[in-house]
Image (cartoon, rainbow, N blue to C red):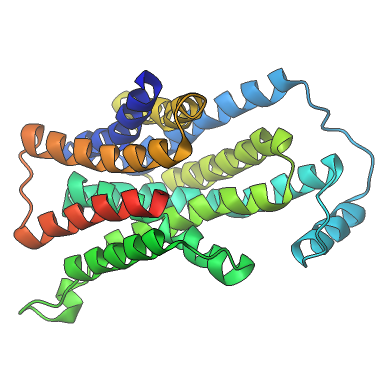
Length: 304
């Protein structure tokens, strides 16, 4: 159980560090760049320590043809050479999604508070579930359908039109966080659907490296001052970002997934909201509190 709690603490720390950086007006582009730099370096270490061969025979056209057959539904599993091509192709696209998800995570924390931002980040699981249903006919169970319904209800509640009108009620940053965070999760599933697990580290390296390039380029284009504090904060985000998955994998060795995943998702949201209220003096409205509560229940049911 220790590893599961460490995974929860690491996951919650990401949002809380963002709250710290946003409340002090740090350069969010520089913070994101430093985060993905740390993730890229660790991915390089993991990949090359695995000893997997990367220089395999086969032309680019052959690899693309193999990928095309697999994605078209031939049922064949990608070869090592095909998996390398798949990791690089998908990683280049996923990098932009990962970068956007982290940017809107920070924007949401600043505009709507760490509690709601953390809840909507975890709600992103609805995106891969919905797309898996449409693309691969992976039907949710009855409890998962109930969880999906509660999750949708929480999204509607937070964005319900007020006296100020629909435009002022919509919280676009939270909705984009939900969308991009969900698409980032979906990219992991898409890789696992067709590629060999041995080359997952290459996929992550290309993904994190692409996100680092996007973020670094925008940091330079914005012309904003980059301080040592920005870089240290970004590296501080990168550490729990990496180790949340690391500790979760260790926890799954002794705890059934049906127990670990609901606790991981719900526990992260609870810790974020408790710390947000206790240390950052955040106060949610009744509707927002109800939405967070619905999200916790929904996350538990969806992961069962």
